[in-house]
Length: 233
Image 1 (cartoon, rainbow, N blue to C red):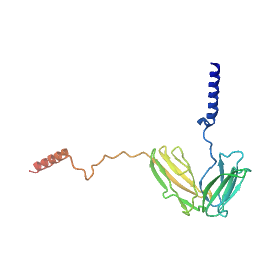
Image 2: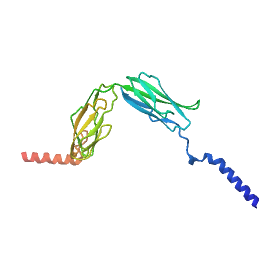
Image 3: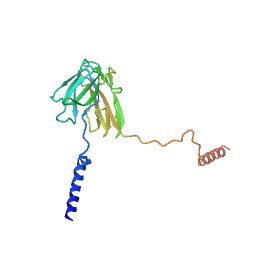
């Protein structure tokens, strides 16, 4: 009996030791990845590229397919991060090569597009009227139109209307607010006044032209005509 118990315990221990490394509780191993795969930059701007899930024994080297357009400068010994800079308009691909010693682990790529700096910004309308609790997106006109520079939006009265980083206005209370869009490269601004008002009451629905009059409508019309003829006689 004791021998059977010992053998049973040994079998359970052996099975557990084999299956334990594959336990789903441990989770899958996370692969290295970049913080961005596509990037729009304006001339002269910089961006920090970062590799996540990098193991201690891994090293990273960065290369640019077009060094005249986008330059790369690794700021750490193992290359966990690198600073890329837009030098001229155009496009380039930045490749992060991950190695363990001499062994290649993975190559990660980021496509970078460099556009010219914006020199002008304005709103199509100086005043926008929206109803309470509604949302509206402001789309400023930026020149040159090939520029991908993103303005910074700000509301001077956020209790009345707030604005998101993408220019989406949310009307919170009745009143006025001035939305300012600023170009980060030059500080040039454009303003738009937002008036928040109460929504108008819905007008009574009128029957469509194709809608046929009901029998009740015909009877009322007939009675009116009969009364009119009687009065004339």
